[in-house]
Length: 332
Length: 150
Image (cartoon, rainbow over the protein chains, first blue to last red):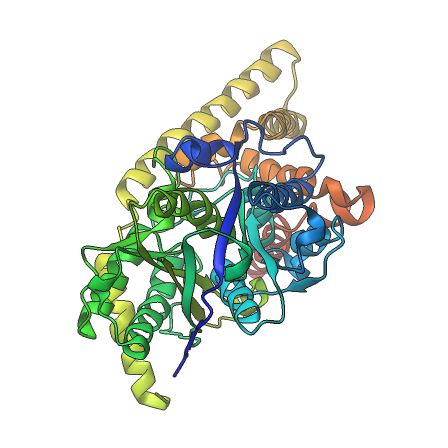
């Protein structure tokens, strides 16, 4: 059993989100709390910009929940940069305790699962879970300098510049109808993909594994969910995931959507779509949650996917181990 | 899954992924590389004529002058944020000529400037170009040795 059930049904109270310039042109542009025209956000470096975006998302989530910083008991966050500096430096600006997590691009769902579990257990009343990423800081850490004139392969994805976060709180403290009902912690799955430009193919097996396991553990059918949202598989990865899940006897053709696939109007070099921790954080905490709030979606399985590689491991020829955590959200 | 089984399984998955993956457009990239690379070389030839006729340079001076102008141009376009845009559509056409080398030195220098002039800019300046220099010198030495004994 990889799934935990939240018997006290902690609630998602409110979200905060911020989108970079390229992201704002896509669907999240209409839903994010703030859209940036300048990807440095007025800062001198991209790392500082990433940190400022994450701080914005946290503050906005607290504000949208009608709370103040003093009401928050814990902050769960992580990001893609070495030593999760964006999350830690964001936490520096606040008085509440901080729990740093790393799960690459699946940080958002891991944070939600941890926050949900701790509130369900009664340890805390209100927790902020947030994460973000920045194209330029990720590019510099994982790939090449920005100005280097190289061609991007057609399997490549584009790291999302953006951040998103949410306040998760105990049922009795809020009237929000969106509840966290269960969470499935993923296994690390590695099918031997070594191409760092093909993250979608590397992560698809992990996503498929977690979704199938979640459905087995909960006894639900895929059709019980209005939407199964994966994090950043991209167009190619989504297709592979659908096939892999189909092979295991589960049909998600009609209700699966991938944040990476929908985040951009692909016009330039985004090819397969968005990626990065900010991808699922931004899309889920703006677009998806708003749809749930309006009642257009009632049951959503959020499965953010992460590639657990580093430049050292890929330099040494290791394949890419991947993970996916699932959290189920329901209107009650 | 361990040992051989796992390898077989991996191979099946990778083959399966490859059957889906959008193929790299080799022919189109080659064509672009030919065009852009050719244009850069033509520009070099133009610089050469210019230096030869206007400044009456010749021999090594002429070759060095041409290289300097091309390196300057590559660096300038990198600084203006234009070179990576050219590179994106040029296949390898903008990487192979000396302007590409200038770009590969200049771009990390710009990128890592935020970490200081010594440990950032200067130390990281050759992260991309370093291997080109190492293996360039090595290949040059080997060819030189062969040439010596022939």
